[in-house]
Every structure is written in structure tokens, then in C-alpha cells.
Amino acid sequence: MTLPLPASPDGADRAFQVDLRGLVDLLSHHLYSSPRVYLRELLQNAVDALTARRGLEPDAPDGAFGIRLFADGSVVRVEDDGVGLSEADVHTFLATIGRSSKRADGIAEQRGDFIGQFGIGLLSCFLVADEIHVLSRSARTPDAPAVEWRGHGDGSYSVRTLPASARPRPGTTVTLTPRSDTGEWTRPDQVHALGRHFGSLLRHPVSFSDGTAGAPTVSVNPEPAPWARTYPTPGSRSRALAAYGEEVFGFAPLDTIELDLPAVGLKGIACVLPEAVPAGRRHGHRVHVKGMLLSEQADEILPEWAFFVRCVIDAESLRPTASRESLYEDDTLAAVRDALAERLREWIARAAASDPELLGRFLQAHHLAVKSLAVHDDEILRLLLPWLPFETTDGHTTLDEFARTHRTVLVTSSVEEFRQVAAIASAAGLGVVNGGYTYDRELVHRLPEIRPEASVADLDPATLTAHLDPVDRETELAASAYLALARDALAVFDCDVALRTFHPASAPALLVDSREARHERTRSQLAREQEGGLWGDILGALRQEAPRAQLILNQLNPLVRTAVAIDEPELARTSAEALYGQAALLSRRPLRPAESSLINRSFLDLLAHALRKDS
Image (cartoon, rainbow, N blue to C red; front, side, top):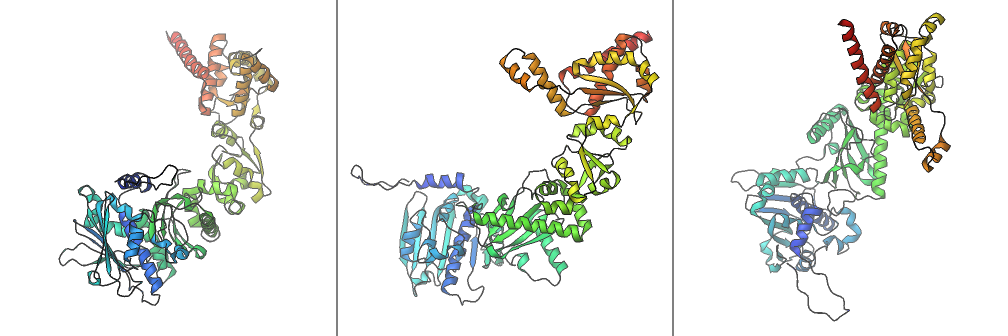
């Protein structure tokens, strides 16, 4: 409904018109994630009313004020023993969209005690009902009358004063008559479930009844948060926290880390995931504010590298956004994020110092997360670099073990380079680490910071070829004709050919070619193709002698010994192309179109030669 406005003179200020149905539609589609939040908003209003009542009566015993939920399929009712509303409050706060009772009567200075901050929560009830009935009685004035407010989805409302007997005690009752299409959110079992979902950690007693004759009233939050309970032993406390984490998240934690930041009134637990998760995938955390569930997907509470835990926290001083489904990004949240990150670092350090078995299981699952942290955190680097697993020519092992065996640690720049040389480097006694995975190369180069006696260097093709044994002069001369044909056949790939002996003998050839060298050759080729143009001049100025690839044939391999003895020029060229293609495939790098064509052509030519020979 759009409220009509009286005519105003030109240039005069006018009031905004409000279409309540349009506003409710805006809330449902763009502010709130689901209609189910209506119950959270009602619970929140009730909690804030109880907080204000406690301010009026600080000496009241614990549990004197509570919240009662009722749903029988025809109505949903939320009743509290809070501060209540007077007739003036009703006109001021329930009839004005965006006005919050927390802004009045000196409460503004105490707003940190309240969950709600925005004064639009009651409108969420229109997501499930066309009429909201509020019956309230103020605790601020003795013998205050009861006040009834009825709001309708078309934007109209009515207010009337009732005798105090209409509500014998101070507080507020909100009653909704659900629409027929909202039964999913207003059935008795669903209301009970939503009550537990949002209010299980509330500090005020919350109960539920479905009106069934003889059915007991059940508590929504029968126990305090698990971290607020007393346990007979540290072990029983740890088991209880782990059981709670499993109940909330659905997995048995590898370990639980208690979180306690008194400065912001934050308590909770971080549950260490028992299995690895993809790097960068951030699991949402379960965040409560003053006991009320705010979000199950709050990923802003921890830094990105902490994707190996999921948290349940309850905080006093974090600010919710207008939708109260996420946290407001401010200095307090940034400080909390840094403090929680420090707690996780302390847990890792404690495990490294006192529980090697736990640390081993943790690193087996989450070494990538720890590597990302160690890159930027010198303390974690010092503690955990020796423990972290790496892929090496000795298999998967720790850097500490690897450095004990190999005085010089060589590291590749890519996975394909490592796979290309691993077997041959191992046979030659070289210690090579695969530096192609995220963070690995950078971390290996920092090994001397932990072990000063260790030497680390990037693997250079010349380093590897220097460890391959040359063949004797007679063998070299006998193979010279074949090697010349092979170099000519592979010149199109900027590839040289050499004959060496190396282990394992089962490897016929090794293609030594770095990614940087291929890029340089590609750039040089582009410059040659653009010769004479402006682009050619630019690239020509940058051109340098492009490093060539090298196909190293293994004289110990029977196939190579047969190939170098071939006296038919075309067959010799074809065999050289086939050996190049096989070595390129073993390197596991992406093949260029010309290389794919060469592999197919050499295979067919060798097959044709074999068939002609047999016929």
C-alpha cells in the first residue's frame, strides 16, 4: 500500500511514500536469505526486551524472565517477560519503519547490550503472515495498561488500549496467523527446530509448546554453551567439545582448539578438519552474537589460510550487518580475526613441541595450508619446515630427512621438469625436490634459515648433464653419422642431440628443456616472423640467443644402441623423431601441434617399415 500525500507548494519538502508490500518483497529477496529468519527476529526482539527488563530490575534472580514459543499449526506465538511497550512506544516504534526502541529512553548509550540495531526486524514477520498481532504491557510504569497493536500486510494498523488484566504481567506477546503458503516455516515441528537452531546458546530460558493436550513444554536451550560448562577433568572437557563440534559440523574433529578473547567477550571452539580441503576453499563458520545465531557461513572471522578449521563462536562485541546474517567489517572484526589467527598458530606450535603424532596427522591432511602460512610466518617456518612433506627423488619425505642425505638440495621450477629428470637424477645420486607445487620452491630455498649447513640451488640442465657419463671416443665416432641426421631432423624444434650413458638403462632418452627456454625460443621465433616490422624491431632489441633443448640418448639402452647403428638415412631420421617424441611424452609437458604431428608420423613410418621388412 502506498500512503497518499497532501499537495505541497512547489519547492516544499515532501515526505517519502512507503509501499509496504514492496518493502517486504525487498526484504525477502535482497536482505534476508530465507523466510525462516522471522523467528530469529522475534527471538531477538524478545532477548533485547529481556535485556532492558534486566536493566530495570538488576536484582531479579537468574531465570526469572524467559521466552515462550508456541505453534499449533494455526498460529505462531512468541511471548517474553521483557520490558514491554507503552501506548506511546507502540505508536512510535511499531508504526514507524526503521525506528528502533533501542534508540530511545537513554538506551542508545547501552546499545552494545542489544542484538538488534536497525529497527526493521518485525517487518520480517510479513514474510510468513499477512497480520501481526502484538499485545504488550510496559514494565516501566506500575499498573500500566495493556496495549494491542495489529499490523496488516497492506500497510494499515490499529492500536487500542486494554485493561491490565488482558496481560497480567509485563512483557510482550507477538502472534502470527501464517499464510497457507508458508507452512514450511510455521509448522509446530519447524518452529521448534528453528527455535533450537537460532536460540540454542541464548542465556535466557526459551521453551516451546505445540498445544497438544498432555504434551510437556520442552526447553529450547536446556544447557549453556559447552565451553561455559564445568567438567570433572580436562579429558572429559576435550571429549565434550569434540562431541559438540561433531554434532554441529557432522565430522569428528582431528582436534578442538578452545577460543577465548575476553576483550570482546568471545568464546568458542575451532574444529580441525580430519581431511584435506582444496586450497582456497573457505568453509563458513558458525557465529553467534550474544547467544543468538547470526550465520552458519561467516568466512570473514578467520584469515584465508585457516581453511583447515571450522569454528563455532559466541561474541559480545561483534557488530551484525542490517540483515543480521553476517558481520560488519570494522576494526573490531579485524582485531578479532588477527587474534584468532594467533590462537591457531599457538596450537600448531604446541603440537609441534609436545604432540608429534597429532602434528603428523595434521600435516598429512593439511600440509598445503601450513605451507601457505609458513611462507609469510617466520615462526611457523622455523617450527614446521623440517616436518613438512615434499616430493623428492627419494620419494615423499621431509626436508629435514632429505637434507641429511643430500648435501646440496636441487629444486625444480615446475612439476614437469621434476618428472622429466627424477629417475635419472636419482640414479646419478642427485637430490632433487619438486618445486612446481604452490609454495614449495620458495620454502625449499628457505631451508638454510633452518639448517645453515644445507645448500639449495635451482636445478640447471647443465647440472644434470654434467652428471651423465660420456661415451668413449670410438663409440662417439661410430654414432656421429646418426647423431648428425638426428640433429638435422630435430632442428625444427631447436633441439640438439648428444650420446651419453646413464641409469636407469631402461630409459632410452632424456629431453632436457626448461619452460623458460621454450618461452625464449617462442619469443625469438615470433621476432623472426615479424622481421622488418615495428614489432620485429622491438623484439629484435630484446632478442638474445635462445637456449636450445637437448635430447640425450642413453648408450646403455639396447634400443638406442640399435638405432645409432642404422645406415638407412630415412629410417635413422624417423627413429630419432620417435625417440624425441617418446622423451617429450615422458616429460608430461603440453605438446606443441608440431610435436604431436611428429609423434604420429614417426609411429606410422616405423610401422610401415616393419611391415615392409616382414613381407
